[in-house]
Length: 181
Image (tube, rainbow, N blue to C red; front, side, top):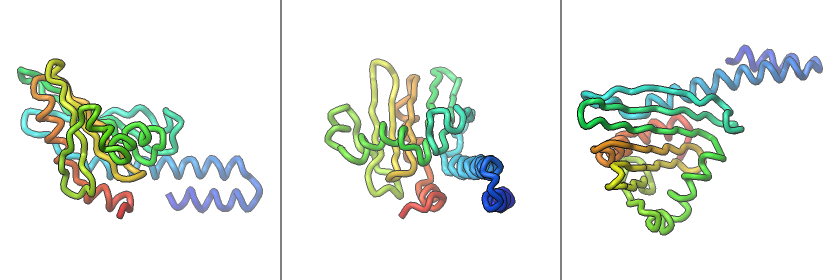
């Protein structure tokens, strides 16, 4: 990546702004890919009988400067259960939607049916909301201003699966990766 930064600096100094911009964009692609890999490594491994699928909506697909990706945990043994995690890093648009609820207004979170879940390494609780009749659950983890993980589970064991994934995230590693103190 440093080769792209050096090249961008040289092109900028020579007044070739288009080339400088292209080199910087390639450096950002590499940096985002590295951040995504590190964030993925902070997620819990699949339990026995479960599989993990990674999908990517694309960097900047929502006009964000950050990184977003989706991870799905599936267990197809009856009764089947699925939990999707949307991970947003340095994404003001995504962080605003889940971060405000989790950090700025815990009373509002409670009014919307979320309960607090202690997660090792978080200074504030994660949030969990169960929908019994729909056999679904939602969870939110936020690291102030930087990382938002939104979980949505469906199936007979959705609540338990979402809770397990919430508490299984390696918060220390996420904090270290994104320099959050």
